Amino acid sequence: MRADELLQALLRDERLDAGEAEMLLAHVCGRARSWVRAHDDAELAPEICMAMRALAARRAAGEPFAYVVGSAGFYGREFLVDARVLVPRPETEHLIDDARAFLRERAAPRIADIGTGSGAIACTLAAEIAQAQVDAVDLSGDALDVARENAARLGVADRVHLFRGDLLQPLAGRRYDAILANLPYVPTAAISAAPDPVSFEPRLALDGGPDGLACYRRLLVAAPDALAPHGALYLEAAPPLMEGLRALVAERMPGAEVRVEHDYGGRERFVRIVPR
Ligand SMILES: C[S@@+](CC[C@H](N)C(=O)[O-])C[C@H]1O[C@@H](n2cnc3c(N)ncnc32)[C@H](O)[C@@H]1O
Image (cartoon, rainbow, N blue to C red; front, side, top):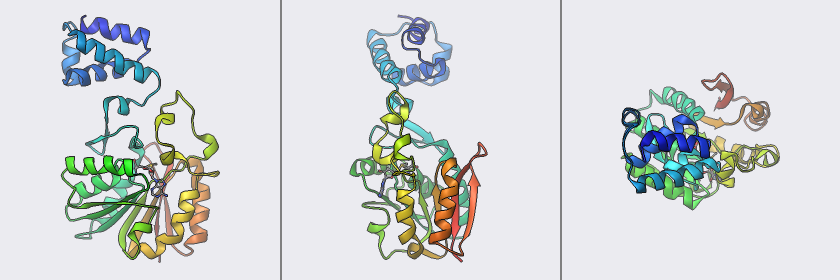
């Protein structure tokens, strides 16, 4: 079958988005998307057509595109992702920008990433800051397997140390120049059902309890003692939760300097807290 015929068939039968169909074909053929564009008359081998149809059906059922192709871009790097981890979101890249700027005068910063998932935050900071030492924690052993593979592929495994456990518990007694946490913050009742792509992501990565703030409520108990002098705590959440998160921080860390930062879409996305 010709490439353009197959793509048309998938747009019609599976209602795939045209861009995604092209990217899927590039993935299956092991080629760049530009190659697919330039070769729409290419005759495709039957096994390529079969593989395309299988992946297209998964996507049509709602599975995130990143799971279907097995990777997601984050801060200019490719991360392996599958159903064991949350797909890293572009909004989280802003947290990286802010933390890099905050840490720029420290030669060898110590960083903790709580709820590391794919390792997107931990590996990115290790890759961007040459001397950084990063401790990354997750409750899920499956997620840590993915993070370990990403750290190895990105050449930062010697500076990203993985711990399995609850929040800051495995890091007791250590102090950090920056602690970053993108913990589950979807209120339980708001977790999407299939076929929403989010419903394919691990519940442990999404469920933030009745008000979405259960993990942050507990993290804020231990976090002040885990920060080095002049260290910063970063917490990411969804815009509707920021008011509640701000109030929680004011209660748990009174007197701290708290800045609410926006993502590139202009929505409130994370808080940076520096105890005074
Ligand atoms: C929203 S995902 C974020 C993943 C990654 N940091 C990112 O930004 O793409 C939250 C992660 O926190 C982990 N997690 C949930 N509860 C936790 C807990 N109590 N302690 C440590 N990790 C936890 C989940 O397994 C999941 O990998």
